Figure 1 (cartoon, each protein chain N blue to C red):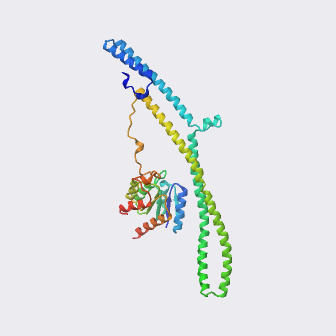
Figure 2: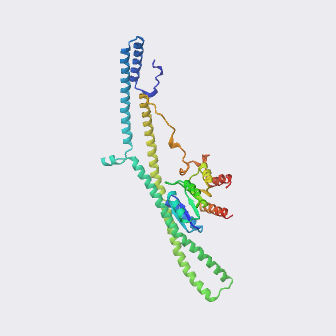
Figure 3: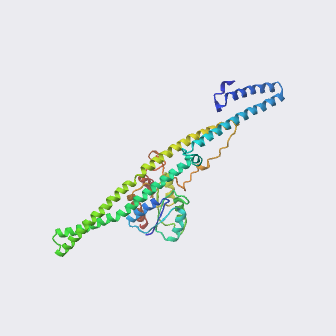
Amino acid sequence: MKILIVDDFSTMRRIIKNLLRDLGFTNTDEADDGNTALPMLKSGKYDFLVTDWNMPGMSGFELLEAVRADDALKSLPVLMVTAEAKRDQIVAAAQAGVNGYVVKPFTAAVLKEKIEKIFERIQS
Amino acid sequence: MSKKTNNKGALDADVIAKLHLQADQLKEQVDAGNYAAAMGLINELNDVRDQSLYQEVGRLTRSLHEAIRNFQIDPQNAEQDEALSKMSDASDRLAYVVQMTGKAANRTMDLVEEAMPKAQAMIEQSRAFREEWAKLRRREMKADEFRELYHRLDLYFEKTATDAEVLYGHLSEILLAQDFQDLTGQVIQKVTALVKEVEDQMLSLVVMASHVDKITGTVHELGPDASKKSGIEKGEGPQMNAEVREDVVSGQDDVDDLLSSLGF
């Protein structure tokens, strides 16, 4: 299971990386915005994408749209971990095809629950 | 005649008086068919308008200088007075906040990452010993097995004491790493006060500018505010006062409810 973590703050990437490692996911890479993440996704055979929304350059929402528009990537599970808390935004993310949405600040338990739920749904 | 001049536009009293006088004279001359004199009066009216405009522009310029000077940092010397403004100081201060919080977060995570394997090892060793202890209590342990356990227990106690000491040290360091809150809090409060000050000064600039507009009769065409366009793709960062706002979720439970209402 190879996971790409996208966030513009290195501390948040590190937190998520640590939490994922605790959940048993040790194969992770990091990117600091959509522009760096997209080429990595296209060449890197990732199984899962965890992304922030608000980032300079390409935002996480735009990255989600780009992933869903790409034939090779469109079925990649995407979990958004973001401080964006407007109802409109959450609805927009759902419509754009996000698989899970975690608002910051979040707990390890919430992250675990959402990731497990996504995998359950994919396998069923 | 002067009953409706209730300080609207706040023109100087002598300017207003001149305007009234000249307007009356103009009407008289036009009524009398004395057009050359009327043209002269219109020119004079123009002069009054110009003078008042110059006065306002002068006043505005002085206030602007004052406002800009007010932005300066407390000057230690003339050079600093020139070079540093409170605004650039504020950006430096905020950069310092980002740096401090980043440093504290990384320091904390360094310590946690060092501590976790030690805690994990303690968990595993304790579990292993518990199984062997149970075996001993059931009197299923052979003498040489017991000797071996005896020796390992000795090592374990020694190692646990050292590891626990390290853990304790890390926890106190993590505690200390939280001092950024105090330092950054003070800085942010200072910057907040500056923003408020700038807001007040900007407001008086806007009032002054509108004053000049009124005197010159300038009407600005205000197009639709392009910056207000909602850029949902870009994101906005954390929302304030989420608890009292209808358009913002107040936590993960709200998000889950909203998503399940959408069939998630």
